[in-house]
Amino acid sequence: MYIREIKTQKTKSILPVLMNDNNEIVMEVFSYMKYLIINNYSKNSIKSYCFRLKLYYEWLSYAGLTYLTAVEKKSETNKGVVENLSNFKLWLKYGEMGKVVPVDGYKQIRETSTINTIFDTVLSFYDFLSMNEKIESLDVYKTVRSNSQFGGFLNEMVIKHEMTHKKSIFKERATKKGLKYVTREEYEKCYQAATSLRDRIIVSLLFEAGLRVSEAIGLRIEDFKEIMDGKIIIKNHHDKENIDAALKYESAGTVFVTPRMQQDIMQYINEVLSVTDTNYFLINMYGDTKNQPMRTRNIERLISNLGKKIGRSDIHPHSFRHGLAVDMLSNGCSMVQIKDTLRHKNISTTSNIYAEYNITAKRKLMDEYHKKIETKLMPEGIDIDAFVDMLIEDEQEEANNE
Figure (cartoon, one colour):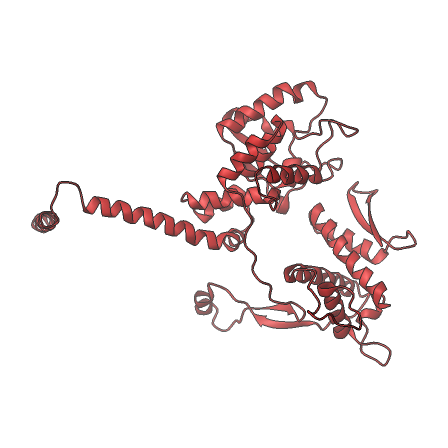
């Protein structure tokens, strides 16, 4: 099993396809990939779905099953859908397990959240097949009540309507991971460690502008027509040649840059792009792909190298976007302001990601507020008893005026 990318004839879209060991396209997965394109899934999401289904098909081969026999009803020759998919979950969690159990037990090879994501893709694939009447619907869901933080309010508004949703019986509660982000100080170190003007701009776009990698890669020179006013236009150019460019949820908009970024960008356009035959903004500087748009792996490699230079081997490009959000929270920005800056589709996305850091930011703001209040209540040169008398006199005077 392997994955290759092909260009569709009608839309000219780049489509990842799953190939079997005979170098043939796995047609049911190919149909599902086309379905995802029609429903406006991003290129990166479609690629991720394809890789997850590749894992599933590798397990099917290992288990001696096909995508159809794996979900057949239980019989003398078939373990049934629940047991088959449970075995797939064990394979994802522990890999191949022999008859002899190690003394310290099997070690989990994938995080629970990753296993849940892979399972969601597989079940979505089967839902697609069910809609196309290729198979019957899988009875692997349970109905649960929605857990809303606004439950009390909603219960009053819709007393007789119980909010519910379907949940896979294979979904396992995952341990919440800590958010990986770079601090402003670490961002500055990465900026200084970058060896070219282009690389410094990339670091700044990820942190100061909060861009996703796919958005930075998709930038064109025309998107900087208002750079004199400190603006960058984020839009989807629907460029089939720029393979890694994408906008999540079509999150077009405007971002504002710092004066330093503004100067760097103008210098880069004047000194590099003005003498280069290209419309792209972030381009490769050397080799066979010179002047072509950068790929995601190039930027990931750049950030990894910069991280090692500053002693942070665990950071990735999205760590800078998270860093901007945490930095904004720490400096008193609201969730609405952060949502607008990051161009999230829903504010709940922003709140869910940064809720822990919102509490920290609120504590910091209130501590600063309390310090200011204490300073005002205890002005230098005034005795506390005299200060209380002054407040009483003010209150009496205000009552007399009324």
